[in-house]
Image 1 (cartoon, rainbow, N blue to C red):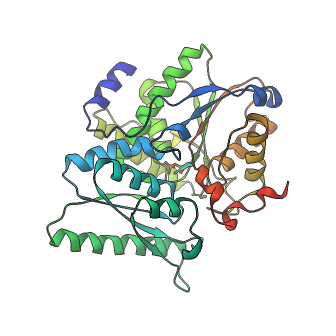
Image 2 (spheres, rainbow, N blue to C red):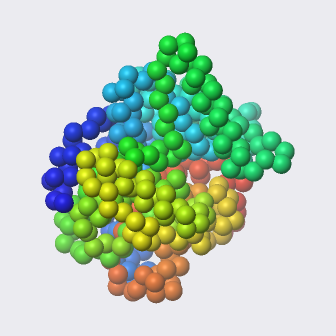
Image 3 (spheres, helix red, strand yellow):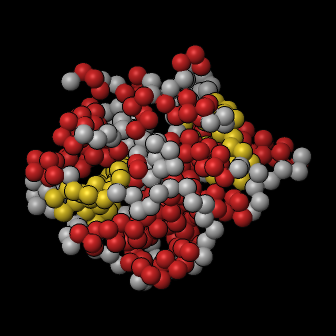
Length: 350
Ligand SMILES: *Cc1c(COP(=O)(O)O)cnc(C)c1O
């Protein structure tokens, strides 16, 4: 499909104007020289709507657009206590006059007397926050399932009182949310074309999979030659690719295009997430310091730092050959730099 036809489909959808697009796209001169690749960065962290932007805003433009079209009053969503998605959903709700309710699971237990990072912002934004603490013997998956169950009960109660509730899945990973990154890919492809450089690789962090599904769907629709390397920060197994292909196909269909994705369309790497989600890695922290000291910009320890570390390792091993033209998609998350010590680890040791 031509970009213009995709844009026409996108324009037919209800959308809340939350971000400031296109986000900046430019070359990282110092790092390009140091690494031996031609490295550009796409600054989704500059999406708006506040200083603490990121990749969730594009998804929320379509999700909140849909919520408003459906007459929602309350918006429920999920995540970890320091979820970027949850905080950005609250911002979006405030701007659009909806009431946000969060059900957040505590991988890292928050200190009520010393709230940090996104939880602090959620509080300033006045969100109704339900923190789900881990029960003894409960797995993280069980804790997460319990948070959804409690939220659904809450939604049922509000519905019985005559209120209209809208549920947004974790990370905004849904057919509607992922359309944001079909949109995002079209925007990036145009910016890339304007530079005259033929880009070989697009690198980004993947969590819920919504961004990856949208990017890969956008690439496929445009028949764009760039390879997309998705570095997993949670450590999903290969079943993730089937579910992501399904998600991308649902987005394509919701948009009015044809489903065309299979698991083979994804290039996903789950070797760089350890020791675990929201647990800092040595290499991720090295990457944060490198970007800060070479380019004066910030990555985050949970997502972008680990993806950047994966990319650096690919460059070192020649999986991304010297001289390649590479784009790093900065997905945001810098509030994590002000999170609990458990999330930062030894960032300040070097
Ligand atoms: C949520 C998030 C991601 C991952 O995006 P998904 O669409 O959930 O896969 C990457 N980086 C940051 C900073 C995020 O907040």
